[in-house]
Image (cartoon, rainbow, N blue to C red; front, side, top):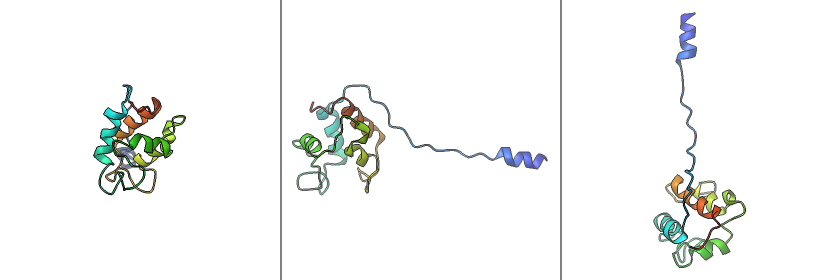
Length: 118
């Protein structure tokens, strides 16, 4: 009886839940907060820059490329195409080294704040 009790109560396992994106409450600026994300992880040769894969996330055209290309959904921010890619919910992880929770939270906050060109 003691062996049964030890075996059934002594074995545990850790349940690993996916990390949740942090919540950003500060005002997010496209120029100061979003473009640096793109420049570090997206706007690279043969990726999302001029002559690369759409959308072009080069500093001078990124905002219009996102808005005009339908990558942003201000009425349902969580369903924005940009976020779907960044969260790894499409064919490839974007950025290629995998989702970045902090970047995703910043982009989500920016979209929730109206996706302004600020």
